[in-house]
Image 1 (cartoon, rainbow, N blue to C red):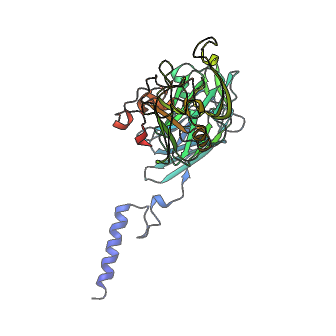
Image 2 (image 1 turned 180 degrees about the vertical axis):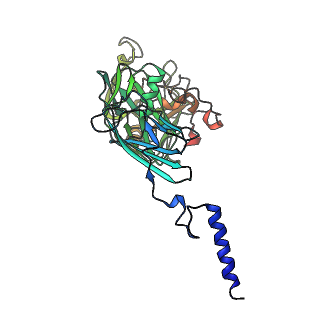
Image 3 (image 1 turned 135 degrees about the vertical axis):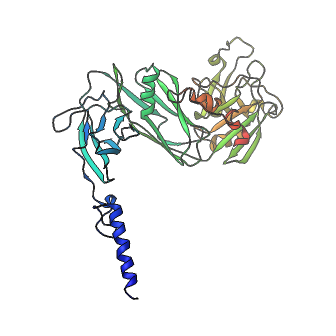
Length: 420
C-alpha cells in the first residue's frame, strides 16, 4: 500500500511532460519559456533607417521597426533620446510593425529597445543606438515661458511666447504637443492659442493651493514645417500659495474675500458709475503698486471734461493693463457700500485697501458680479482666461478642437463664488 502514492505521482508527472512538450523536462518551473533570459532578436527585426557609427537617420522620416518572417512578433518598443524625450509610436495589432507617431529630433541620439516573443512565447530583446542627422538650414522657433519663477495665486495662467508665428493647425499641433506642463497635485488642463505667437495654459478649474507646476519644451530639433524647426526653451517652475478669491458685487457695493474656501474679510466698496461700469467676470491680479498717479487722460477723458481727474492713489492692486485697479479711494468713502461713483476701478477706504494690498499676490483671483459693464476681455488686457468655459477653452487647442465631449453642468457655467 505504501507504493501506491509514488506510482500516482510519477504518472501525473509523465502526463505533464507530454502536455507541455519537450521543452519541459521536469515538474518544476525552470523550463517555462517565460523564465528564460531574453534571446537576441537581431535576426527577427529590421529598421527602416541606418544604424551604426557614422550613419545618420533622416529626422524628418518616421522610425519603423518590422518583425521579419513568421517566427515571432514585436511586443513593445521604446525610443528615448539623450535628453530623456520619449518618441511616441504605435504597434500593429499583430505585432508585425511599430512606427513612430511623433517627429524625431534632429542631431539627436536615440536608444531604441525592442521586445519580441517567438512562437513558443520566449522573450527576445534588441537594443540599438540611432543617430539622426543635422537639420537643413531652417529658422529656429524659440519658446519663452511665463510668468517668471516664483509663487503665485491659483488663477495664474502659464504663457508661452513663440519667437516666430505658427499658422497651420498641423504645425500648431507639433508645437503644442511638445510643450509639457506637469503639476503636483495633478490636474486636468490644456493649451489655448491666443494668436500665432502666444499660447496660454490653464487647468479646467483653478490650480490647487500649494501646488508645484513645472513647464518644459520638447521642441528642440523637431521639424515644425519646411522652414521652421524647434529651438531652445528655458524650463519654468512655479508654485501656488493659498487659494485667495475676492468677489465684488457691484449691485450691493460689497467685496467678500475668501481664503481656501473660507470667508476672511468683507468690506464696502464702490465700482464704476454709469458710463464707466466696471467689467464683469474673472480677472487675475497682475501686480501691486504702492503709489500710482491716475490721470483721466490715460483712459481717453479730455482734461477739459467735467469727468477729468488727476489723483495720487495708494495701495493699488492692478487687474487689467488698461488701468483697472482695486485701490484706496478716501474721497469716496461716503459712497462705499451705497453707490457706484468710480471711473471703473474698485475703490475702498485706505485701511481696507492696505489690507487687500497686503493679503493678495500676483495670480490671485478678483471677480466682479452684477455690474452693468461688459465681460472682461479673455486676452489682451490681462488674464481673462477663466471667463471661457472649459469646452470653449478646448476649442482653442490644435489638439482637442473638435474633440467630442459631453459637457457637465459645472463646465457650462463660468466659475462663481460658490465654487471657491
